[in-house]
Amino acid sequence: MDPITIFIVATLMMLANGGVLGLMHKDLPVSLQPCAETWRIATLLLAGSAVLYAVQYELPLGLVSPMANGMVMLGCTGYWRALRQFDGVPDRWWMWLPALAGIGGVVWFAGVQPDTPSRILLLSGVVAFVLMAGTLQLVRGGTGERARSRKALAGLFFLVGLFVLFRAGYFLVRRVGPSFDITGEGAWINTASPLITALLPVVGTTAFLFMCSQRIGRQWERAAATDYLTGLANRRTLLAEGENRFATARRGGAHLALALVDVDHFKAINDGHGHAVGDKALQHVARQLQATARGLDFVARHGGEEFVVLLDLGQHGDPQAAGERLRQAVAGAPFSADGASLTITISAGVALQADGDTTLDQLLRRADDALYAAKRSGRNRVELA
Image (cartoon, rainbow, N blue to C red; front, side, top):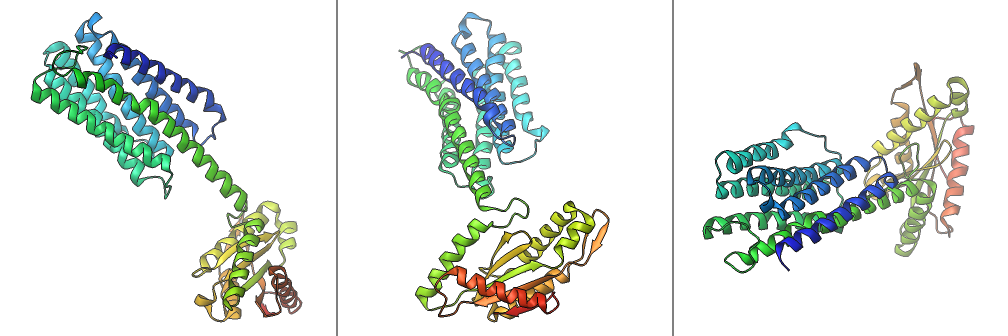
């Protein structure tokens, strides 16, 4: 296949990928739309450069070379920007400096003082720099994300960046230039160049879409497992984690301990200050419980104004003392919202898994009995079942 045909096929595939991204744009979450839009524009820039490369000998070099090379540098920078947007990294004006400097240099070496080796070296240096920056973003960014699509895209950025540098070195050492000649010296690299560089907008776009899909999947998983108001684990996740710990404790001859926590006089907070303040009060309590957690403690919202803390006895030792630390953390933390300054306290019932407990529900019921005992005794206290 000759290079012109490769450029045409690559252009069609790039346009198809750009079209798919455009069709999917409105279906993506708002948080992913900016990076998808940037990626699509970058892909279309590379498609435009492929068209110009295919007709470069039909137009003046001083016109087509800066346009085609400029589109490549801007397109690769756009991919870098899209990855930063995907990871929530703010835009920086200096990101565009390599591409802008490269465009200026190409204009000079193509139209003012023609120099093919300098033009190739400049273009390759800018593109390789931007692709390596994208590789680092994929490797170091992502806040702990380890999706295979992310690793695949990082490998693709790195390999294409290496090829760009190798290509420049080959042309400079062999003293040949890029052309559509498929018989002379350098024919193989002239044929390979459009094939390998097209991997980024074609295969890379597929990997990017998989990254978006996996991000959406993780967001749905978190939403299904998390309480929307407090950010803690929800009741569904609590029961799954509790059943697992309960069964593990029974098999190992150990004991599970938990604290059932209730916000004191919560109805009075809602009635006296409004539901908005009540919601902020629940968020306040959730933060204090989470901050006081130790080791493998697991904090969850049980429902309404109730919370459950699965206690790590290896860290606490005495379950009642652990409950007391939770109570003190909430009582000692000042709370104010919408002009209201309130003293918020909690009552807690703590239960330790007994030999007669055969289900987690039995343990929760005993903790609930202890909680009501704490409330009957005046609230802002901890009772052991």
